[in-house]
Image (cartoon, rainbow, N blue to C red; front, side, top):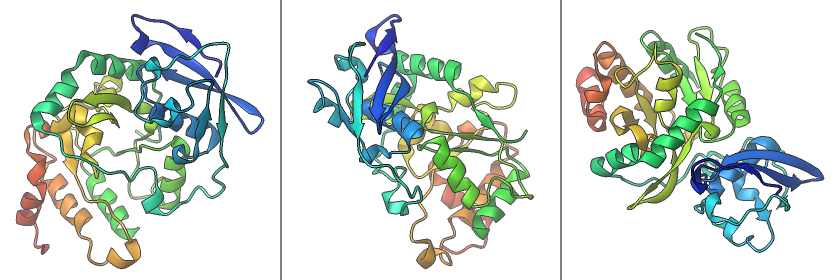
Length: 300
């Protein structure tokens, strides 16, 4: 890869423009030294439509290291005189089985104390500041159960969708679901994997997460920790802002579970019940289902 780099205060803050060759073309991929190989592959996916799990990256003397998704780019001897080559076939059919989706990965439990440590680590704060400076939101506006849920909560909340995949995937999937043009609610913005940052935990190792501080810094007049709640089926995704996160179950095997899945119904009751509170970050969202049951007649 032709890695032309502008060096800042340390190797981990190095901004790299990497040249990746694939299928007769060259792609300029912008990353930071503190990005992981997994982050590099996701950015390549955005440009080439080759899923990270399909990518094999070749680079003189370090190809084996590039097979380790957790490795930091700052730890690899990248030179501006060399180019990286990717080999693999393009994903012609971008719609894959949900179980094969890059969004479905194993989660792990992280304690409150460690989550606070992750949020306060200076290098993570630096990564967040770079995302704030660099990331451009796709602003869109100031399944039946899904539409009913979004329609109900739209009365009290602005809605943003943040995916760990590329913007192409986000727009395509949301378009297929009829979310982007529904007359009963509006999606304020879409975010993709390039808005995420890589963090490291002594207990859990290296992983990527979705820092809400990015949204708060971009739109401070509208959003803060007081009025924001993020729900995700992976707790790790809100490790920078654990107090604003709510874990939900992933929806799988829709044809078999649609009639029995009451997650969105319960979540609707909970979100509407807390909408008028002054500080959403002071709630213990881990027990949200308990309160949802108390607020509705929906059986367990």
